[in-house]
Length: 463
Image 1 (tube, rainbow, N blue to C red):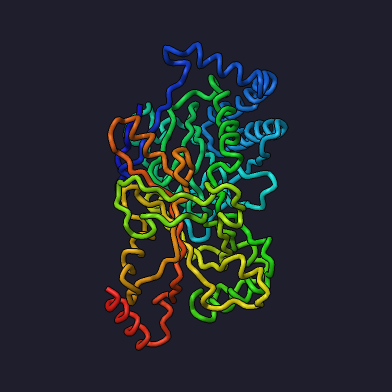
Image 2: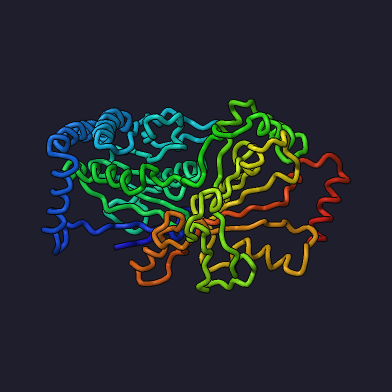
């Protein structure tokens, strides 16, 4: 069943819609025979009994450390067991992962809210836990379980708040569609998944009695996500394939000198490459949503050009290169999850012009919008329908990244939860990306009191 924990003191907004998820376990239902058979066939075909027994032995050391009531002692054997499992799965032609210690890593100026372990792609240069694919935490006492006895309300607000804070930092660090993790509390363990609508915890189980569930989690999370583990594949970190690095560097210098970027954004070439990203914006046919005639709740959909036969990737996707890291990322665990970049089209960097002009810059903005609300691109279209409106940004176009696919990772799981409940309890959110042509200078960077007053006047006049 599903239940909903109430927000802790000081939490607001959509913390109130964070469900606790108890999946159906085949071993505990009338169809237990079928559930056990499927699991047995799974291991015989893919993992093998030797692997399962070795993993169970390694995982048993976690239980011994737990008996000593030491969180620090739980992590070394847990890391050993998880790394063994990842290595065996890699031998089965699955993506190779490494398990890093994360408990000693701290963000500058941040409280020690990080998990104990973090899973990364084995060859990834990412080192900090905020950029992990999967986070792992351990507590030696079952009383520290955020939902002890599978109750609806958090039983340990300290652990629950720690989870919310660390998960928000992970979601903020790099573009994601969802985040996975697991937590061991005493001799029990839970898996969890969170997106911009909700966070779901599985029913607790005794990990020594059912260690194979940890293997299933690692296997399924890798296989059914293509090794991405929830990362947004439409944003590729690092602009290492940029045709002309000097043009990208000059773009950064130009934007910094113009006040668009802070003066401390004059990055070295090597840092600029690693901090920038390649952002894909699918091309779409113009329809009622983009022309401003869309009404919330309607059946109109944006149809990607990929539906046209014979279309090449260049004809179906626009690629932009961000000038450095994101300008803004939302600090909230739930909600719109807004993220913005200053960017230029990749074709500009690959051109023979040799320079970037102000007109080449755009702002790429992405949000997880309510499915029943008007897309931001349609709002801009309505505002400018009768002609340009002073003081209002101009949007080139916007697109929903789900492409109308009901199982897309660019949709939150709200509909699945609402179907389970039988009522509209959670808000479905759609991942939208919009290209904005208007480039502004932050008001905080005004150079004189007159400039501040004029900017404030223009903002009021634009209303």
